[in-house]
Image 1: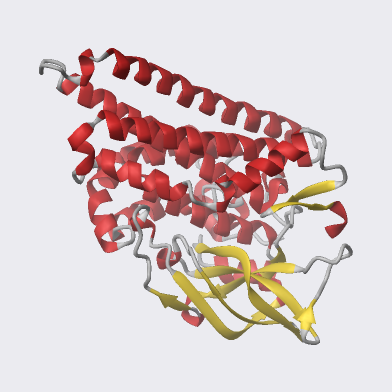
Image 2: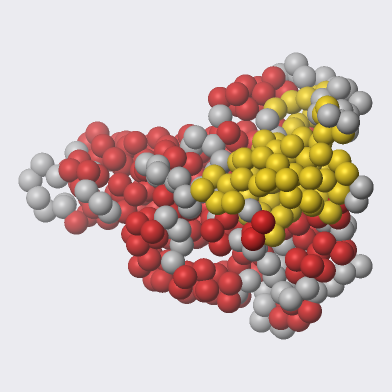
Length: 407
């Protein structure tokens, strides 16, 4: 079993989750100060990246064997939610890179992990949608493709890319006839980056397109897209990439919702003495109370759901289709509740919302984040299908329910 020298810091008594959270909270001034500039440059400031790297935060979900923190899902929810309260794009980059980094550390073979993590915690980022073509050759695959929404790739050492496996000129299929898909990890110097991130929100994530042209990827740098059996690390990784990613998206929405309501309340207090201010508006006060209740309810659902999943996994129980349904439902609920909170705040703040500032930025970032496929109406409908007992013999893939025989 591969164990990185980078794990040495984890043996210190002060490196507990509570200690990590204190360190994260100490970064708030730095993260908030750099947020406007991050948006202008289309990526996180070097000072922010250095600070996150200093406490191995890109490895918050990565196995301890590769120098990560190996947080539980509930701990990760709290951590990313806290960062999202400070700045949404910073949290987005953190959970996107955390997904790719932790999956590489948990699911790749020892020789690949030695190459990637041998000198310490590495950072991986990319897009798992199988837009690529991985042609099987002796010892690995030749990868070609173009991917969009590579959140965090500007800060990554390795790029993670999804692809359909081809053999003898056609897709290799699973038992139910669906195409076999892989996640392949490629050194950044073999990747072409396209600086085309011209968007309304989440500008600082630098989620640019990237392409790879006929690059050989050794087999040990790949894992199946639906893998749930880790080669290192504990029970957390039995949730697979769907579970790890769902934690991040959920926490992002919860943190953004809390911050925009806090900012709206602060604005109301600041204008309380002015005539006809929102502080004296019964409709505003009722609406604010309602939104606080809805955001807190969404948070409670998310934490209750993940606590239940954690308890099951800790006891050695399987990660079931129903578990995935419930965590995806909690994510969808958190996302669209956060969007409602942003819409309320945008309207309540009046002209303040039109000018550059924290309320406008959160409004744009949250609306951008809500467009991710994980929060789509299609997946919500799939949740309804499974909850209603209309999906017997099905299990979850990234894009929806599929025949369980696909495994």
